[in-house]
Image 1 (tube, rainbow over the protein chains, first blue to last red):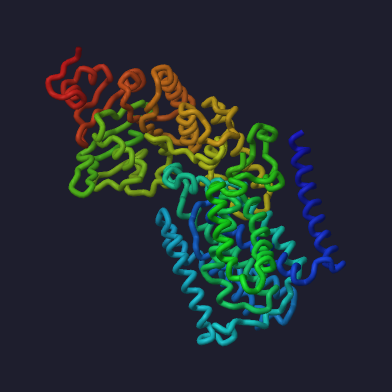
Image 2: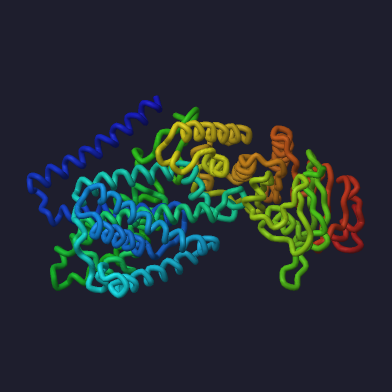
Length: 339
Length: 257
């Protein structure tokens, strides 16, 4: 019985994914949604990928990072510049450039993470805040050592190969990847570090290694999302990857609920649409009030629901089937925080 | 060959000598009690065994291998597990996952197996889950496997801590006040439980405890500490009448009523 339901769940999940994909494609071809909203949707999915990375780092492993956008930006510039100079619009080079974006961000995370993550508590927050500023200043002045990066005037010329199909299916892959990571021994090690780092260490878990792994994986996902961004939006500018953007990712993860992939995904998508929606509601003159409104939303949400919208719960299709004799047993097979 | 041997251990915090000249050997299969008044340095000794503190001087041997100064996770992987004075579970995680997390260093699969759900992943995950369930059954927690650890009653949380410690397949189990805050009938059950797991999992046990009733019933040998030093060792019956021990607990001039 339980086997059947979980198989059914998987089929439902795949069917729902295909249905969403087909619906968007239909709306797109029948011109019900215009290219502007299509672009917003793609932006929402790209944000989802990056936010899932931060979800691993902060939501599941409890490591506070204030520089997620820096890794997103590194991925964007690395992938963008690679494809701009070597790609000439070929699809294989596009995919390679995405992987390069992820690898560059992951490598930087390793370099920063190894010394910092030996320490406990919030040192990572301060270090990543500093790193974010370094990256932003580096991007602003990048034209001095590498003119192709454009410096403070921004960079354009990356082949715009990422259409909705690419963005959608990559997001799908990232969700599956994160799900499989979280519902494995790695995920359990991460959540035990989040819950009680000292106990985890004394019970035999190499907590430094777990934290570094989570940080590198999370930042690599940000890099991948950045690479996709560079191929979807023709103009990269350092100001798109500053502290406020890092704050965006953090907001999404906290509002969605720490330790909930479902929360991160839904909040990421809603958040991007909300920001764009406010543009219309407020009009040109009041556009700067967006900052006020979204800070208010955060304050109200945290007072009303400190555990976040989903509070560590997970939608059924994001929980893989339990294995062995646990199948069908109460609570068998779920890692993380789902109960 | 003693399972655990401490040789001339010192620990100073600034000017304070928390533990000094501490010598102890625990033989295989023993249940040894480490007792003493508050602040005697018992938990500091535990922390030096499990690697949280590095001794200021002296050596720690486990099965004749020196483990002084190793990181806590390395000490644990060699076969020393412990519980905590104030319960330290992974609160938001399920009871089952509290236990399964401890299998992390011995999963036998890598991150690519996990991400691609290879047959190796599925096989090993299955056996980890089954072993963890067996442990929960041994400690009477099987029906609560899916609950969050924080929602368990206090006694069950204590049992879960022991289940989690056992998941590391230890040879030596350190219990830091396993019966703290329990009423007499719960204490009696805890005594039975410790005996049971000791036999079932072929363990050597070293425990810190304040409840004399429990210590007298359970331990084969006692080590009494005061002000960072050993003041007496011996069988429970011998310790009961030891003048130094009575003084340490009750002050000078005290006699057995």
